[in-house]
Image 1 (cartoon, rainbow, N blue to C red):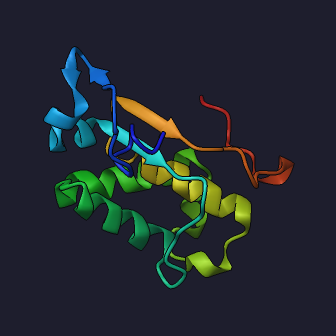
Image 2 (image 1 turned 135 degrees about the vertical axis):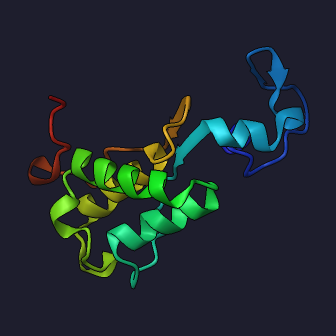
Length: 130
C-alpha cells in the first residue's frame, strides 16, 4: 500500500495503471488516486470545511469546483451540519468520516482506503446512498 501511494519507493517490481508504470506517471498517477491513511493525521484547529479546502488546494482543484465538492462530500459522510466546527471537537468516528471525505474529494478514479471503518461505531456509520 505504501508503494502504491508513493510513500515508499519500490526496490523491485512495478505497479501498472492502464499499462503504464506508476513511477513514470508521477503526478498524473497521483491525480487519479484518492488515499485515506489509517492514522488520523488531521489538523485539530482546522474546521472540517477548512481542512477539505486545504486538501482541494493541494490537489490543484479550482475554488468554485472545490466549494461545491466540499459541501457535497461533507453531506455524503454526514458532516455537513458540523462543517464549521473544529476537528479537535470531533469524535474518532467523525474524524474517520472526514478522512473518507478528503479521499473522495477530487473524484479519483482509484481509491486506497487503509482501515476505513476503524473507529466507526453504530452512531457514526456513513449514511446510506440515496
